Length: 580
Image (cartoon, rainbow, N blue to C red; front, side):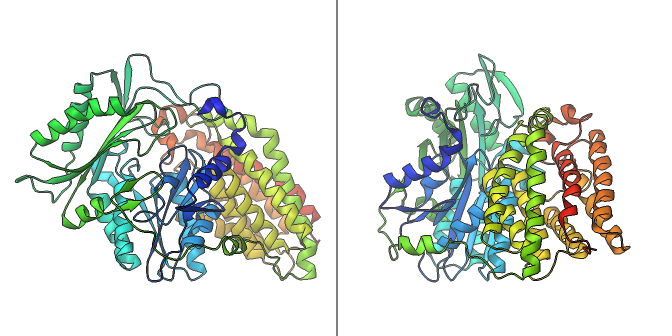
């Protein structure tokens, strides 16, 4: 795959376009992903799934009758943005609402949560459900913090059946939760994968060794061992999963289980069948009845060499979901006719055209000041992107600088378009935020998109930009990030410099300090707080698995936030003098 790709910036869009061209009978393209070729019938909850690209057939390949109604696709190994998820959900939604389902990764949780709030604000019922099947990514007593890997499919199938049966949104959510509680997965890796356009693998495993529990993006596993034989590997996979038998599953009789042996990209079918021979023997020896086994590639990671085993502990209702017919581009079981009216391409396109909201002359005047803010942000990030990436590489994947630069460039282009169209100050910031989140993807993209959108919403398009509205918007953004991102002060995240900034700015504005001076003082507070994160151990995101490397170095998200708000201070001179 990577031999054919020299322009990674266009890779995802070109891949989705090609996928839709090859599957026109089943899916349609919408901004941010794909939806079924037929409309969601009235009275049926729409099940929208999603995550980063690079895992085909997850996620676009699982859209179709009997499975998902739509899939939002992010950049390679990065969450789709809230805008992408919102766009797909809007296209898929019926009158009965939307269930958003995804793996339990920080960027996905944040972006799907933001999209949920936007949909609800428009009167569309919506709930989010994160899959947590990977037993290696957290202890049993903290199962809610585990990752979602190949077991996504069992949850998606359960949700799809409940939706097709006309269940309510809450009932679909509960059935998805029941399926997740009965799903366990365990994976290993023999080698890493190479991202499109990259010259080196994302990660490596020493020759003759195997990473145990490594994630599908190369997340740290629980141990590294010598490469076993196929028989010994089968024993390891089965033993670990049987040790995690879900509560409530009978040990007597012959419990029924759905089984998935999943190849991660380079381990092909003949090798999987060799491994499955021993897996099936061990499971049957344990007294289990195997139901509709799946052996193949269900969730991949480009050409990563590795496998995962999933057990889906069935009851009568879950077995019905597991064996129900489904027709999608990559997953077909039984036969199911197309259901619902074919979509009108013109309607899909019209639904996503941007309008220019009305704005006062004062707000249009201040829109130029908001553009200057975005210009200052983009210039500072461009200058510091390499250093941010180096800081992030200490305990993360090193993409913070690249992601921030991509997001800021997109934000600047969107802000310029908004000003040219005569938008008000608030809309300029909101459009910039949406573009940042949409193009950057991942956690930082979602956070900055949410932040700019929150400030823009407070400023609005009716009045001149005033200090109380700006301060309130920053507080709104901070509260939203804490709520949706799940971070707290001391977790070593961007929040550790953002909250002191928001609190100081609000206090200074309340005391009557002019916005420019209040912002400068808050920026200094933010810088000190960002530097102090060097003494903290990370408790969120990938860095928490490398806390020994992280201590002694400040958090890149906290540093970039402090750096950006300092750069913005000078641009506030462009606002009218009475902004107080």
